[in-house]
Length: 506
Image 1 (cartoon, rainbow, N blue to C red):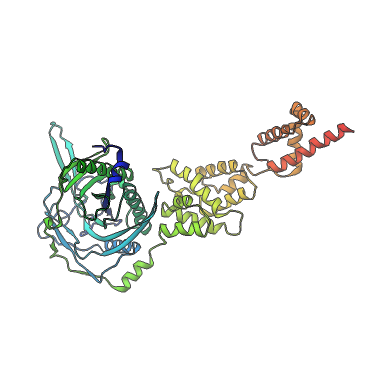
Image 2 (cartoon, helix red, strand yellow; image 1 turned 120 degrees about the vertical axis):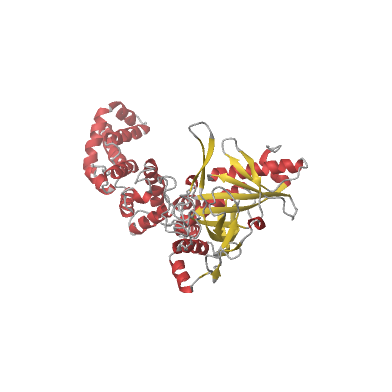
């Protein structure tokens, strides 16, 4: 139910206390505890299974080393503590998508704990504490369908069963729907930078759940928490939490007792709905997994993982602003993906010593090149680092523009041609004659032709109307299809006009 006066009115009376849980599907070739290949979107149902991920009696799990490394790398990127030993636990519950009746997970000894994530919001920088990052196996997938005879049925696809899944849990530090969204966006960037996950929400590779409670402003005691699930985009995260804040505020104002629930998000209706009463940890009857020994972390192994972690987006943003002189907005766009950031840095390195400044390169990477890549979304060239235009080639084109040897309009044309043909943009400029004309003699021919074709404008200039010169410059630019150097054109044109005026005066 909407709150009278809306979200802002609710926030004047109540303080939201929000914790975020994110499940990220890890980027591995095989499942968590067996050798089955990770199922892609094109896999037929129930074709990537074996006795282990089907939970058949007698099947024993084997730990996926790569999955462990990806969780450790994520924990390190978040500044978390890695214990010398960690343990596997059984999380017991009954559901059709859980073939064993339990899930192998981690509870009191996760792979990483006590981390931090800092991100920007409209109210400034915020830091959220990370309680834990642990590893577990995914469940199967339920598909609700209508059978040919008209009956409704729930079908089970076990291809997802046993997929490696990382769960990242925050402390209840988030205080608004916007903060929840910005946290999730920044975490997605971190996951992609370290290579832990593709983290595409629309494909279920990153699932965000929020535990939302309210307390009166000035109160310390926590309210009753409600878990919100089924948020399939960052926009949904913000909308769902905002709705839940209003719903809980209205209920509290009416004197209703809130129940600890799990609620789903209905994107079409813009409301949350009851799914079930929320379980507590004791309901899962955690106990140590008897089929897996504790996992001990070797210091040399951890050092190798840490050495492979790249510079993270927050650090790059700060460097782009502080060292390269970019605006926070530009820095945010350029670090939105690691591929874009790496491309930009390579272009800046290639442009060293030329007229192409980091700011100019940033404008082209985030502008025209990004536009071409976005137009090719869904194809092999739909990413900045796969357009066929290399960082050094873009830097060379930007240098031509900054040197005044090609206009911005013609440079865009050259870039578009290069995108389609695979040629270097500078080569396109040369081959198609797109370079700027700055030679006095060549421009003199064009100016003479324009003066001869526009006697009325020439007469206006002679009559003391200097704005006529601007019109004539424009005609030269039009005649040369924008290739003429406007500064040189004006100099040549005024010299011609002033010479004719002086001749008439004699």
